[in-house]
Length: 113
Length: 116
Image (cartoon, rainbow over all chains, first blue to last red; front, side, top):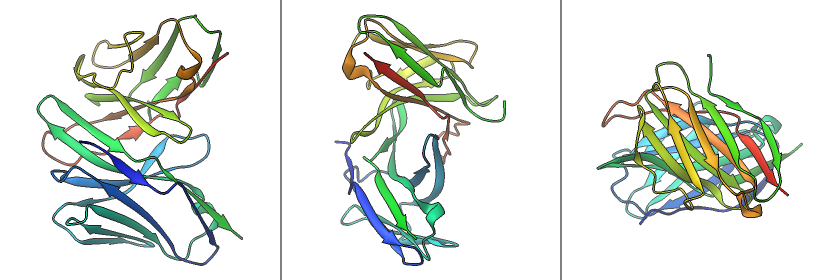
């Protein structure tokens, strides 16, 4: 089945690290994604990881993938108030007639100054 | 255009009325998606277009929902006889799909639908 789960809310202080977690169910997923949604806006792709990788680093962002446990995390170093947003993880469901991203419920990150 | 454009940005309607939501994808993008975002529900997949055809419409919640795409470009999502539970933000996304490879979805800002 297709199910992606995230915790709903995370609050951190400015300058601290944030870790947002995600679990997924489709072991055949080839790519896993993190999208960011700022208030009143659509989603923007932050980063992605290929399923044969364990880790990907991109500036302040670190993505960790534990394929055995189907667990994905996004770490934001030195979190800033501008990082306050909803973060969605997503897995790609591709095969047969379909090609779509399955999104999680989203985690609201609140950064306290 | 430069990005995915959706209209209207806000729509308030009365229960039982029909509504049409429009999406203009990025020029040249062959794949187009509709998602629905409700409080606490995340993003719910509705339908996927490749060109003008919809190989996956498995997410449409009922037969009151339909969508079409013409000229491989603009798409319209129609909700007939709206109900209060249809209230949500409807998001459209497009991509230049490359079969079997990674693809990046570009999202519009969405249409906030409120059914009174």
